Amino acid sequence: MTNFCSDNTAGASPQILEALARAAAGKVMPYGNDDLTRRVEARLREVFETDCAVFPVATGTAANVLGLSVMTPPYGAVYCHKDSHINVDECGAPEFFTGGAKLVTLDGAHGKLTPEILAGAIGGVGDVHHVQPAAISLTQASEAGTLYTPEEIAAIGDLARQHGLGLQMDGARFANALVALGCSPAEITWRAGVDALAFGATKNGALAAEAVVLFKPELARTFAYRRKRGGHLFSKMRFLSAQLDAYLADDLWLANARHANARAARLAEGLADLPGARLLHPVEANEIFAVLPGPVIEGLLAEGFQFYRWGPEAESGAESAVRLVTAFDTASEDVDAFLAAARRFAADGRKTA
Image (spheres, one colour):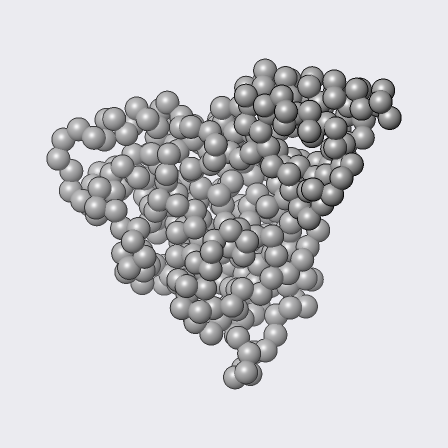
């Protein structure tokens, strides 16, 4: 039955699997000294319209924490949303890879930070008793499925420069954000003040491939050593690069993201009309957070639909929040089946109420 738990439950795009098969042939130099890796580096420089440094890695956690490690000392503070992946889902890896930096977690509506929120938190400069401001981390799309506009990122980028802070972006769903915003990759990264990007591919059709994109040359000076020390310098790097090369070729990454976003919009539209349901956040990419009546949730789960209950109220009785995530391979028929079942259970619940 249809699985809406995460875009991580999806498989891989056929084009990427075919690219891996091609990459398996022949003898190729190891550790990134191969033509595929050079081509990925060149492709991403074209995508971002600048001479950036590109480092393939295998996981989003590695992309995030290695990127943070080159801008954050052990006594540094990283300002992030309380629901951010680096705070909730990376098992202390940011602290480990920075040598002990502190995550300073902040609240913000719909999963987003603002310059005002950040300005109120940044402090302790020069005081030996406090961690020193070092970096800001944004998630695009956010953990609530919402988006930072180019103007919003630029405002935070200005604040980061005023305080001498690095600006890192967790772009696990960067493609979903990009196609929804309808802007260029440069507009929501380096032109807006982003110094390091975790460029995601795994959630959008790859098997296991991400890239760290560094827009400041000085950040790249130690990155290669940190990647090696962190266990992400692959001897057969061509297999990571083959995924990224196919991902970028013919705009597959953008087509996959548009598909996922469109299925989410269709699902959100149906849920908005469901009796007793309400959306918790604007649906701007491929994640939906909604409160549904208890009988609807139980009925859907019993019928085999898979999704996560979400938040502290997830087991609290008559209604609870759920998270639904669409992917590059989510079929319209699966969305329609989910909505039809939800409407049926909602109607049954109203009859018995």
